[in-house]
Image (tube, rainbow over all chains, first blue to last red; front, top):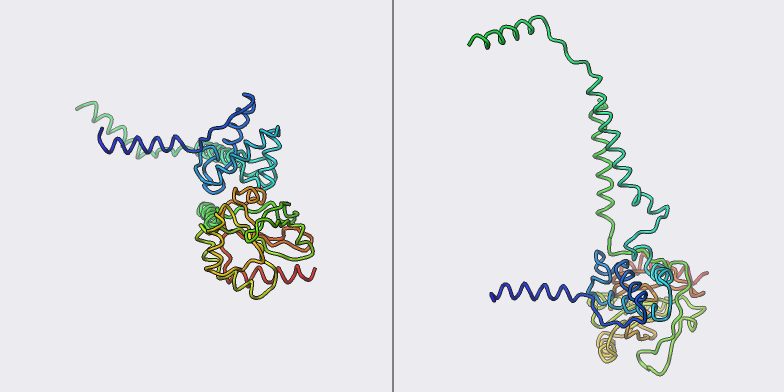
Length: 152
Length: 175
């Protein structure tokens, strides 16, 4: 194996191991809850990774926290509340719908609508603009050109 | 005329938004704790692990809760500032020694001076999670009733001491 291939494979393997700990779950529901929670919570150090994806220390601690709370029989909602009470809404990858986040939710729709209105206005204006009539001079010139074309 | 003003207006609005975006610090996450009671805990002291400290023990005092670790470089930067602050005796500084080894923490304080009235240990970062700590150092200002009134993320600087911490402590002392 070429050294470069080996390095590449090793890097790939490293990425694959991110955030994997051995955890035992009593029920499949619990495991499912763990997996969905860790992929909904943001790693606050790395910010663009979920705690399931991140290798950061804090992410590992938060994974442990989620696991322990599930073991104690706490529900998903309770765990999400625990996290937002401590880290704010920023810890959630799905931002909650609030007055503060209205623009976040409706911004794309709003911009799309603005675009649609703009396009409609543009088309209308083009249609209503009267096409410029040709003057007699121009008409004769075109006639002459066409006739010449026929002859050659 | 309007034809030229509209793109200009759009440009200005975009410019303003981008300028605001540039000034925001994405690593500074507002703490949901401001105005809420400091989460309770009972943790062993760094200097004498057989003794415990709880926030309730500090009722009636304005105090600073500073999260630090010997492995944290920003903590080293803020350490002399904390030493200076401690000398002024404006408010006791309680340390939270976060995910650190006891020997490392003790030798760090020996070497660099100890600004803390005392430090408690949080070897697994559990108290840290309870306080919403996501990066060391962080500093909380807690009032006489045990309510968190302010939080600083990142190292304390002489400017923040003068402009934020000392005026706030004076105000809270008077409450």
